Image 1 (cartoon, rainbow over the protein chains, first blue to last red):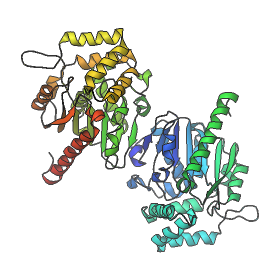
Image 2 (image 1 turned 120 degrees about the vertical axis):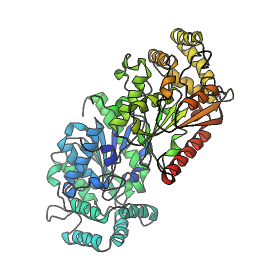
Image 3 (image 1 turned 180 degrees about the horizontal axis):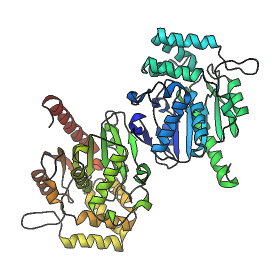
Image 4 (image 1 turned 90 degrees about the horizontal axis):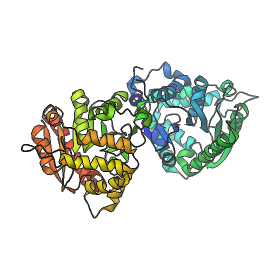
Length: 278
Length: 278
């Protein structure tokens, strides 16, 4: 491999365990969004953190607009990291669009992953009446992209509020806004287009990796109907509605997020030990 | 490379900076000995931790008695880790025998390292009268090895007390003893023989990497005369006597250890910026 993937994707390796758990940040974010969640997994897992190329402290010079024009390019980042570190039996935790990026990675290499944890997944943000409700009209998303071009800081402020949707948690909104603002606006816009205009509904039914879907309450970006749709179309998936509100429970409600992930992994572990492979 | 070096050497990558600082544990120890030192470097460096093959949570199946019969085999572990992660401009921090292991690694690949920090180095533990005082007679070291064979737990207890040499710090002695006791006795004995019977005095003068020598007070394993000998024969070395007593200042006196390393690195940094390369 030509690139040093550890540098390219700003890979960090933590924890005392052997099974890898890889945390993939959502749109416009870097690995710092996991800081309240990671410590709970350090005792029993090998924790892998990274930034997608173009985000956080990744090597921006490795950004390739063509590669990252679709979610497949981001999925390749996941596979590159796993390949470079020769990971096996990976638990993948993805937030928002990274849920689908993880699904795409698992379609390329199904045996690489033991489980997927999807936090607020949406296979398609656009409404497709009458059969599908994604939550957004095409005009909404075009306005969003247009605002990113014309007033990036203003967009970051408004979009962070919409995503977090916890009026009483300005700290979380501020943190997300800061993530957006520290991202190159051109790269953020291309990521937004790859994320918001992709339709991965057909990919759901191809999934083979046992998956936990964590669905927030009052989530504007990935409403409960969308999470239910994922559950209904994704084989071997479990659906869990959270008390957490908004779209970033790993930032706003880390305790519940940790507890539900651990509970799921413990159940998986028990099933594997006592009843054979799930 | 055949092996996954990250797994083989239980590599961890921490920190927010870009310049790598790699911490190499001393004889019979693993990366946990650095736990009180590492946090001070996470803000400005990329911190690399690892265990030598055969120690800690390394892959014991990769242990090869022939390779690890000399310190060169351990030096190769350092080079493998740096190569696998494609590190450059590495600050190497080695405790005790790892000081010399780092020196050997730097003789193979001088341009890989920006600086070496040696904590309690000794190029030769054996006395070689009249010109060299190492602190030990051949019979002392043979007795030590014999005790490792006959009563490993008893040896671990006594040797840990000798090494730490801080009667008022039973916690540190216990921690070191636990490190020894969690190591395979066969591997520990082979490591001890490679460490205690090697004579690297001739290698000192070949050194080309700017080096800080941290010399403890009241150090039984590496007495002050030995540290001074290293300083006199190693080009570009600075000699710093610590207030810390014993042979494990990174465990017993982490604040002073951190402070002196940072002070040295800051001076190096200033010299590089204002006076050209050192």
